[in-house]
Length: 107
Length: 247
Image (cartoon, each protein chain N blue to C red):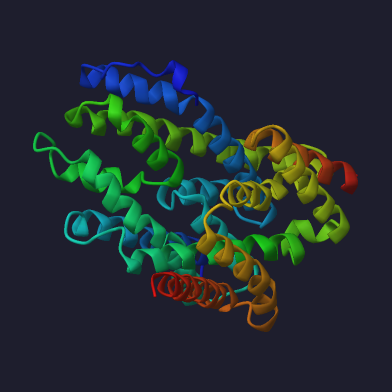
């Protein structure tokens, strides 16, 4: 098996899995109620899934972030949240401060 | 994006609507989205993947949560089937978003093929901006504005992916770690901005608690199970609460 095949298959599968929802959205527009309970459930499932992924990335990282300590990641997360709320929810300042602190603590 | 740079009167022509969309794409939404995709580009490189991989992912899988789930599960050694289902579930929220966006974008004057292209560009930032601007756009010009806006955002995210990938190999290593950390921190703050909805707060807390635990039990299926269990639990508790209130 050539070594470009698994990444290419991964991209193809991910693109298809993403476009399914978009395509169904075009087909079903005007025919089903997007404010109904089914989509309330879908929204919460995707929200919980993403929350689980983010928590896992901070608490149990795989790859590069494994080189950082849990304490550094938690401190950076706390600073990001603190700056975010202190600056009337400035997303850019929040992520920048957390990211910079993690870099400093890992130096 | 503040309301002060938005015109009070409806924008009269399609050409001006497109240009308004492009200008807004280069504003705050584009800057914030760009920063998050710089983080994604760095994550792609640190996960051992090539620049073309990152660019094709951003071009075709556009919507960061699914891209993040894909690369993290791949890194964790999950099977292609597990990744496909987790990405599909992560992006299932695009379905109701597409339906509501279509209600604004559709107009008898447009070729139906354009809606399939428009659907590819649905993601949280552009979707929210479309709803914010719809009142100052003529119904026949909303699609023009939308393509100007999301097309710009799409190009910005491609460039940002490349910048992030290139930076990760060139800056001092601790800076690369900071760039990779942009990924979780960006979504964490998006969540933090959105704690007012009670069912969402429950989904968030249950998901954050279950995610790491289920990952330890089954790295392959943990993420999918986390979404289904935590999301369904939040949904059921919210329904039960609504019923109690109505009883």
